[in-house]
Length: 322
Image (cartoon, one colour):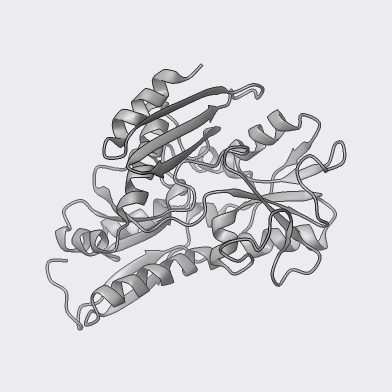
């Protein structure tokens, strides 16, 4: 779109899950605050990942013939290419590290908490689970990490949006615990932004469930976890400027390094790679675990450098793996 006015709405594209809609609402509120005269509308799009709940998430791309493309973004990108929407709102960890040439990641919003959370029916932690307990997750990274930390635990596939997954744990006996991203739990109001005290805490609105936020230095998160990515058409300069105006520079530096490391590994959304970053006083530190497909002991590495050189730090991390 070349011009924008109150009669020409900026169209935001998003998935229809509760979390995706919350992320779209955050994006729209920031745009409205920055450009109060703009008219903003929303288009909700059902993606392959939303539609195919009959197979494990890691097998969706294979079964649909969708290669090197996030199963939660394909249809949204189709709408972007067709001009039906002007910007796409994604969970950044769902986005491939290399985008189609027609699109660009224009900005990322200020990052939410990056940790994973273990949800249980009674207060405890990963170590307190009984032998051979069943853990639910759709993430290969989480599964490999659980099996590395507790080889006796049984990992079962878990699909559905955040409320559905919580209800499955609360109401069924299939799982003894599940793993979810802390960011989603906070954005949907199931956890406060910061815990009142260390250790297990009740999941708000889900009686009988407790959450333990797993420190990222113990249970490494995914590249880009907790960040919202804004994608536009490469040639759409106005939409790109609007996105950049609400972007967060420190989050951009961190996720750029994390995603570049994933790209160097030739990894995608379902690659069992765990990586996190720490930005302090202009220095960016990266830490990674890269798990073999067969499981077992991961390769590890770390690197530190000036935050304004995220690509160099990612390369240093890649070269440090051992």
